[in-house]
Image 1 (cartoon, rainbow, N blue to C red):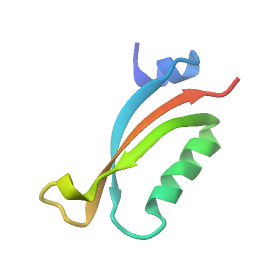
Image 2: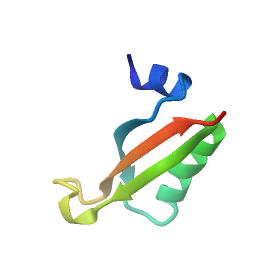
Image 3: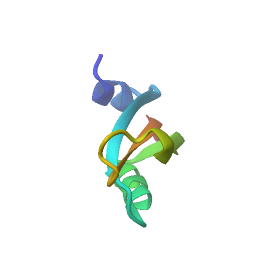
Image 4: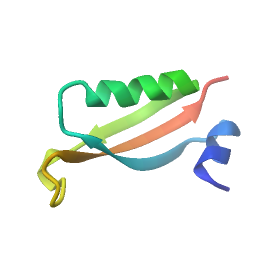
Length: 67
């Protein structure tokens, strides 16, 4: 089952997305989730281990579909 299918079935799913390390980018990701109608169960980003691209940071998310 893909992540998209898990969300559509109302099951929690997790994934990582690389976002720009600039003000407002995490809020933008949260708005995308809201626009898609999913609930954020957990979200975290850690600049410490962001990797070789210092302008991006991984955002680890757990989401599920709203009823």
